[in-house]
Image 1: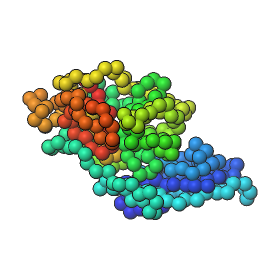
Image 2: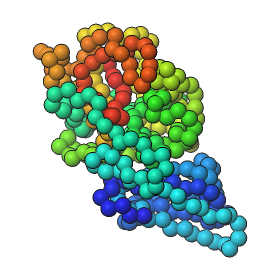
Image 3: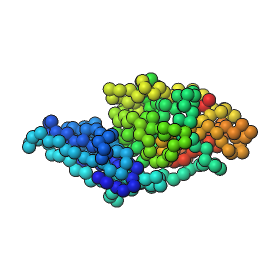
Image 4: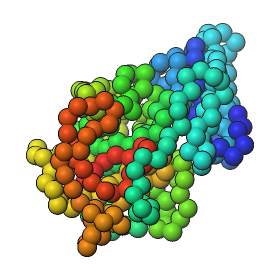
Length: 298
């Protein structure tokens, strides 16, 4: 499957059912990023979005060992992402609105995460992951316990249809401070198996827990939740994947409210929430864009 100029390809399967011994391999043209699926496919779902392949081409190879058993599979759509932030879907089914910038104040203060390598800010941000949901929506989430509990926004995923069809990609980071960055650039390590723990659409959060053989918190650590409200004037920074870019940190701020230090901080606790929530939220002038999340106090 080739979509010229795309930064990634994500394929949707239905009626996936391979015979015993048969398997499907998906990779890039060089054989990298390769993974295989057997039986009823990802998490035995039969219908699912497969793990994405970075680049504009995904190569599928079916290996069959017998003439009987299993129905095969159907590919009914795929999505392709672009540097322009929009997603192009190969059918008209459920095309979602392109992600658009939300609140970059003044000049952009986003920096590649690696610019802070060796600092406590960088180490804490290892727990932050990029989410590709159902092949077409991009968000950020982060680990909050050593047991692999994970938090993101409820507006990003509200049902098993979303969280079972998400690539949870950790350490997707540009290699150098000056490296170019863009939507779905720079690969990380992808995890997939989660279960629902708790959520609240009014307060716009959902907590999941990784259930696979490997717990990402063992490798990347986790961010602790504070059992208190933030204080105006408290220094903070953002670690996230705005617009689905490789991980970026926002530590500095050129907004007048963050002078004279030029560092992000909490401005108020009475900011109106988005996405229909009615409670008051933390206010700040750190730059953020669609897909941003994960506010960390210093």
